[in-house]
Length: 375
Ligand code: SF4
Image 1: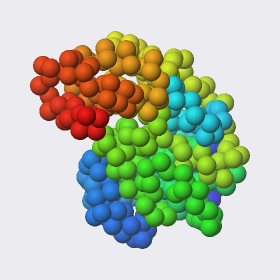
Image 2: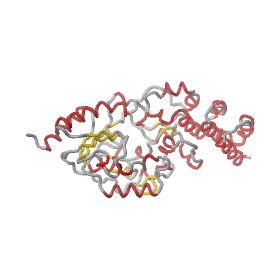
Image 3: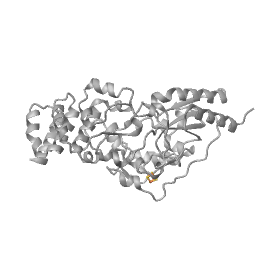
């Protein structure tokens, strides 16, 4: 009869054969990470991400997710396919999309692979119960991954692995039996603070503490309404997520790439003006099966309008004037701001004429803001 170690090793080998790039096993969630998470919630740093404070019972108690859970198989899947440096921020006419979102929605890619691994675990540990998590459920996946030895939580709050970097997805399989538990990973950030210093919106308010409400990933993806004015200039050309803190991280200078086809950048323009011109149908076609569709057209074009406002590109003025008639008030509101940024006082007569019949409060507020700034 095989030992637990031998069975765990066979499961690990199978996971690597399936295409996972990292494997580790954690025991229970630590009281320290639960306490840290509760303190973070108490500060309100999750903003509008109410799902982060829902299901607390499950998030702080794995047993409520899978009764009798004893081990958590933590998995890493690399998604990096192309180098990225800070040069991207200089191309102001092109929208920057976070590396993980340039390709297929990873949830689709992962489903079959996890099912196969679940079957293998159930085969090795006959009769055991399992539950898969791919970014979908209330568990503290980064502290678990650190406990499972996959990497450490960096000062930017992402997980980093020595000799691999941080461009990867995490996923988990909960198991109600004891597997061979891994050694936790040690923090290797040292005195470095590059991620803290580069953050355009100063969202890393202290080492290891992120105020998500200021984070460009939150502002461009999670936030559904108007982007607070104080963050718009700092958003630069970011239109979906932000990788800045990961790009400057020294551990990513040798980040490992994957040849997984689904993770290569899909075709389609990222020129801001082209994106601003997308109607509903064009948006659906361009971002079908992509993580970007999460913002819906109105969220993405809101972000594109801000990026155009930051671009200094006067060729964007005509498309923006056309977008003043867009059926989405959220888009119109940010287009008003963008025209103010590009044309300053010259925007005033255009806004007055185009928006004489404007009835939406969020758009009127933006007009008042531009008027107050440039009158
Ligand atoms: S940039 Fe430096 S401080 Fe930030 S996560 Fe990387 S190593 Fe840690």
